[in-house]
Amino acid sequence: MRLLAGTGEENLVDSLKISEEVIAAIAGLAAHQVEGIAGMSGTLVEDIGAIIGRKSFSKGVRVSRADGEVALDLFLNVKYGARIPEVAFKVQENVKKSVEGMTDLKVTEVNIHVRGVVFPGEEKEASGDKGDG
Image (tube, rainbow, N blue to C red; front, side, top):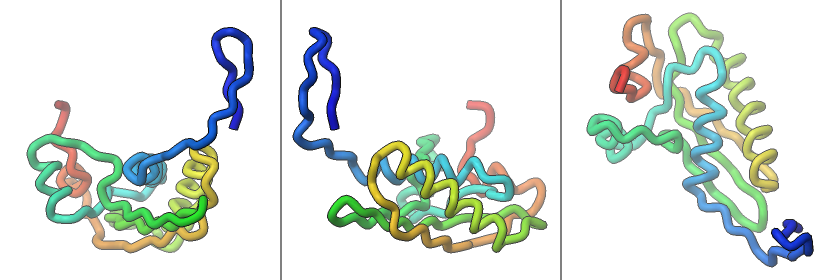
């Protein structure tokens, strides 16, 4: 990867490290953009963080990486009435495109785990949102 310095010279960046938290945040945000997703289903620690008002787009995303490749597991809640196979496929496409486009890592897997179905009126609770704050 080459970056231009302020003096007009080209410098070679020997290594660029992208944390798993950043990869997870990109994947989580990409998943949220798909119609039919009510929210992500996280671990107990992530859910406690949501209760105290800490919003994290990496919630419900597990990242495994090796040698410039990344595999992702997303744990989702789907809105009632959405066609789960279609939503899952769209999430896989959007996450793969976003992560590869922003990080230059090769996404080898995007595994979707549907943890729940959210009924109308329950969306804010399922996504961990705390309202207008």
